[in-house]
Length: 258
Ligand code: FES
Image (cartoon, rainbow, N blue to C red; front, side):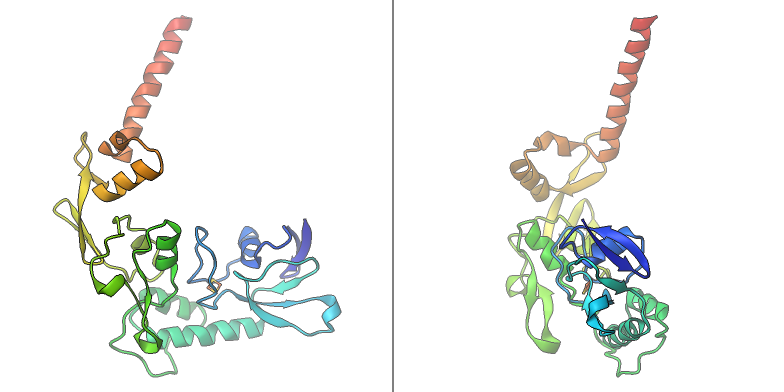
C-alpha cells in the first residue's frame, strides 16, 4: 500500500492503481464521459484531469488525466484546483459547440458555468462525442461489431461498410452505456433493431415479456455455459419461482420442527 494526498486528505492506494479509481473510492466527484469500469481507460474525454505535485517538485505541478495516471507514493492531488476547473470549462465549451443539442453535455457544461459556447456551434451535428465506450465495450465482449471509422470531422462509430454487422448479437451494451444516449435502437412488435440489424426477441414463457435477443441468448448459452432454458423466463419470473421455492423450503422446515 502507498499513501497519496487528495484535496488535503491522506488516503491509501495500491501502487499503480489509477488515480480516478482512488478519487472515486473517496467519493469525490470528478466528471468523466469516456470512463467505464468494465473497459480499459482511453483518456479520450480529458474531463477527469487533475492537478498533481510532489513536495520534492519545488512547487511545480502537472495536469494529468486521472483515469490513466497511476498513483505513486507521496503524490499530492487536487481534483478541483482553479486551473483544473478552467481546463474542464474550456473542454466542455468545445463539447457544447460540437454537440449543442445533447442534454447530457448541456447539463455538464452548465455545472462548470458554461451556458453558451463561445465557439461556432455545429447546428446539424449529432450527439456522438466519440468517447469510444461503445466500441471498447463491444470489443471487450468479443464481438467487434462496431468501430471508429473515418478521420477528423468525418470520424464516426459505425459497423463495417455501414451495413448490418454480422457479429452483432443485439446485446445493447453499446447503446445502454453511451453517455449521451446517441445510439438508437427500436424495440417493437417483439423484435429489436440496432445498427440496421433486426433481431428476434426471446419471450418469457410465463408472462410473455420479451427479454433478450435469440442471438444473445445463444451466445451466452454457448460461451458462458448457461443452459438455454434459463432464457425462456424473464428475471422477474425467475425471482418469483425462487421466492416460491424458498417459501416451500421454510414451510417444510417449520413443519418438520413442529
Ligand atoms: S475519463 Fe475521459 S479522459 Fe479520463
